Length: 86
Length: 466
Image (cartoon, rainbow over all chains, first blue to last red; front, top):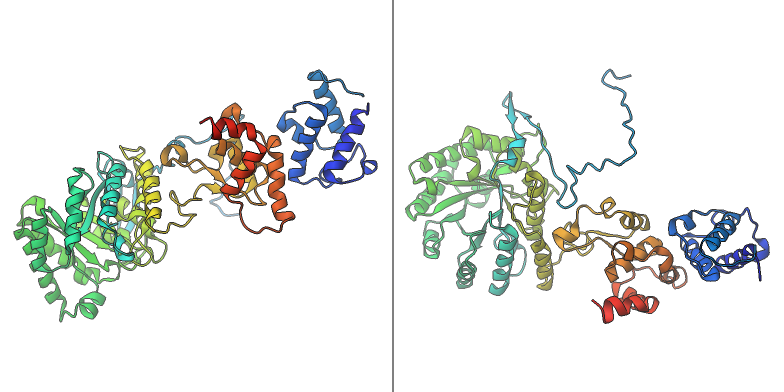
């Protein structure tokens, strides 16, 4: 199974239409990867679908970077009893 | 540094101060007045107690069927009876909308009056409107009315240029003959001082009003002349310090305190030629006119009159309560007026289709968090109109989420968050980015998409549910 990081990068690449190889952990979704307002919403929705979790809207939208998203999603997965590859 | 400047200390708080004593939200924002207000008149400082308006019997009169009808094709009898019925509901049992006036000249005019009175409403009281012609009092008497308005134009534009009197004295004598005829007919005359804001106040208006007051003293009290100050061309101004004849404060002072016309016999009638109509009406209330004459949705000759529904909100704001007013009737009246062809602009306050609709996503975000941030008052409670969001490329997911929640009628924890509306938000963005659309998206289009993207909600709240 792919790791959380790989899956986050895959979803991000798909939604923002960039290559997964170009995405770095320190990249900001908005400033570096160019996510517009609606794309930020789509990212959260796609992460929920990919991991089978539900995230708090405000907390999820407050996440700035890819690395923070990996950490945030891993934490939510733990809280909601979803097994993931670290 | 200016000697009048001073420093101001921050009052830090952890809880918001929403100033709810002024912005109660379940009422329009209140206008709290502290007196006295000072106006310099003829070299003297004159005080006005604005705070007294809370205890004075100020009220609204209506001329939708007279001035309002002069600006549009005639209403049918049925239409006028229906509007009158709704006006009565709006007015409430205390008669905040105290009177409405009718033409009396045609068979239809008289039948309309009869049909309205057959409804049995106490308010608004039906009054008449006639020319300043003695013979016309027969119509008033036959209609059984207690009061009628009559034209007593008072600027030299009217006296000499229009009515062709040879002198002011001849004009006043003529008007007073008609007032006498009213007394003889047992009808209270309401003298409509047409074009008063362009008249010679000291040289014509005040001597004429002095004479009317003298005549009133010889007549039964219930027939005493009322004075309607007609700002026919919208020249009146509210600013302290403005000169006569345009100054509303000075005009009212002169009639009220120098001529001795009591406040309950003074009425302001404005026009909107300079965008001042509503504030001028409120100003007249504060300086001593008890009556402000209005039309529904401001519809009247040329640019219109003070909007009745605006005066209702002003009344509530000044008085601090509803006093039996049924504000929901405003929305029914607006719907009815639209259905019979009266155009109400979408952005028209209190009644336009979009008066509380935001197109900005950032405002929709505010509405989603707390309606009070971007809604002027509880428009759902007072007008049956919850705040709305019109969807464009500027609406964002916040706007889309607000629209969806309002459409399905979801409240509190049942509301759908903006993550759940991402497909609809994407569809909206693509309409503009991909399809090159330039117009707002209609409710019908959004409803079709809501059915597609939220089939469970549709089934529960639209199809089989509510």
